[in-house]
Amino acid sequence: MGTAKLALEDGSVFTGRSFGAQGEIEGEVVFNTSMTGYQEILTDPSYHGQIVAMTYPEIGNYGVNTEDAESRRPWVRGFVVRELSSRVSNFRAEKSLAAYLEENGVVGVSGIDTRALVRLTRVQGALRGILSTADLDDASLVAKARKSPGMVGRALASEVMPSEAKVWDSGLDQDYQFDASGRGGSEVRRRADGAKRPHVVAMDFGMKWSIPRHLVDIGCRVTVVPGSASAEAVMEHQPDGVFLSNGPGDPRPLVEATNVLKTLIRTAAESRGIPIFGICLGHQLLGQAFGADTFKLRFGHRGANHPVRNEATGKIEITVQNHGFAVDPSTLPADVVASHVNLNDQTLEGLRHTRLPVFGVQYHPEAAAGPHDSQYLFDEFRTAMA
Image (tube, rainbow, N blue to C red):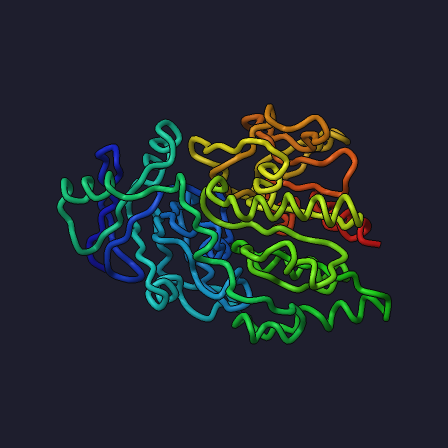
């Protein structure tokens, strides 16, 4: 291990020990409060363009395995931890975290005061940063951080979405370079007992693999299409339901996707009664399609224990979250209601059309933080397709 430095646009510099790949990268510095799940965080495409700091003090103790990946590779730009575990101890582990990051070109740093870093970003908001093992000059690194692009105005979803449509089934693991765990179509065929399986077309803006796995688990056939697909291309697959995935970056530059959703709401949901369900970025794009505004949060929501209230039932869900932007509830039209609210800061966590089968949530119900608090959302989507 050599020296690595993390420099922020406000002039702060943190010095630690490098692990993973060598080099220099820029990104928005954010923090995640989860105690476990670092591999899922690393491979979540929604983190594309970001340097992620973990608040839990020791990371890496259970290693890395193929089965827990949420996409074909890590998408984080850099990884920051207080202490990197020197021992990997888990029967499922295939390699160490350091080896995994090195293989995939991700720069990591350990040994810095992550508590101080998080307190700083909570006050000032998410900051642009440079993580480097090459240039160790503080002034140079701060200057580079101030020139880096940040997240606002960047349509990063186009850099992580697939290039073509694919059928998700037990054989899709090879197409997406998944593990051969056997999850997927065979399990659904056992559960469905020959019943008709509704067809979901999932628009992929950077989708976590656990989402289509959940759709399959509730008895659906799934076709994944790029988030850039036209409304006509989506409808050509004759969906019984349309799903809108998570993804990275600012939703506001995704004007074309927003216009596609306006068409789908009109032609699919209103004309044919086809339900539309969005998660995270998909939820934000639904809000924009309804005419609402989106905005950047000060430091975002990233963790596995965020309390959310269901406004219809009053029940509290413990949720997994990963987003830096949100929908402004004051700009929702009269026929779209706020269905869920974040209890930490009162931001919008869900919306639902009062007449049409269209709804979305900002959090990740597939991540099972509760662990089953939010499963009903997938069940509602499945029931609406019956």
